[in-house]
Each structure stands twice: as structure tokens, then as C-alpha cells.
Image (cartoon, rainbow, N blue to C red; front, side):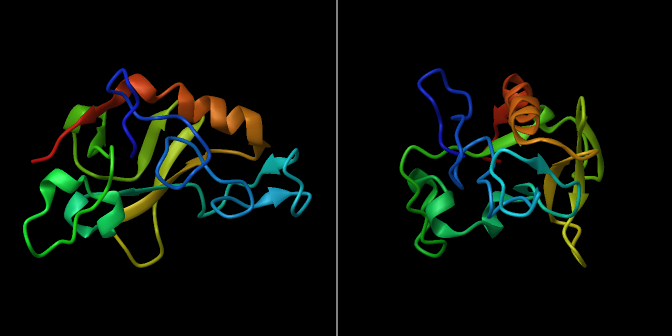
Length: 137
């Protein structure tokens, strides 16, 4: 994720921020209504167990090793929960849970546990901001 001036993840609605892009990262009800509710399904904030599997523009440029193509400007490798446990499905904050993407155990999404207003889901993600720590190991 992009790093804000305070060293924490930058909040926002872009693919490289702590937040989701309405209509592309989540399904909304009624369909397409950006003021509607986020459907609790297998969509949400994308997360990965290992930064080495990310696309080059999401890997901080200082981690370029002549093979990974790292070119992320002002990016940082954030780990939720300060690497306190395995990358596993389960609750990651009030109203939020991590679920694996279909057929995967190393990538997933943080989704709402129930259908909620988009603003509530974004606020719930924002509330996890202090739990994300930089870890480039």
C-alpha cells in the first residue's frame, strides 16, 4: 500500500490504498449504486501472504532485485497485526474478516462480515489503520 506521511497506510479508494474502489473491488446493492450497501461475498480489499507475489507497481522500488521489477513509488509492505500470526481466514477487526480467494491460500480479501453501507465498510477498514505495520522480511 502507499505510505502516508505518518508512516501508516494511505487511506483512499485507489488500488494501492487502505480502502476499496466502489464498483470494482466490491459488489454494491442495489447494483451499481455507490451510495448502496456492500454485499458480503468474496470481494473486498485484496491482501497477500507474501509481497514477493505482488505486481511490480505494488512492490516498493527500493526492493528491486533485478528480477522482480519493483517500481512502486512511495509504496510500503504492510502486514496486518504486525505479523503476529499466520496468514489465515478469520476476523481482522470489528465487522471485518479475511477470506481466501477461490482455490488459494496465499491471497485473499478483507470483506465485511455482513452486508453493510459502503461508508461503514470504509470506516471499518480505516479503523484497522494502526494495526498495519511495515515488514519487508
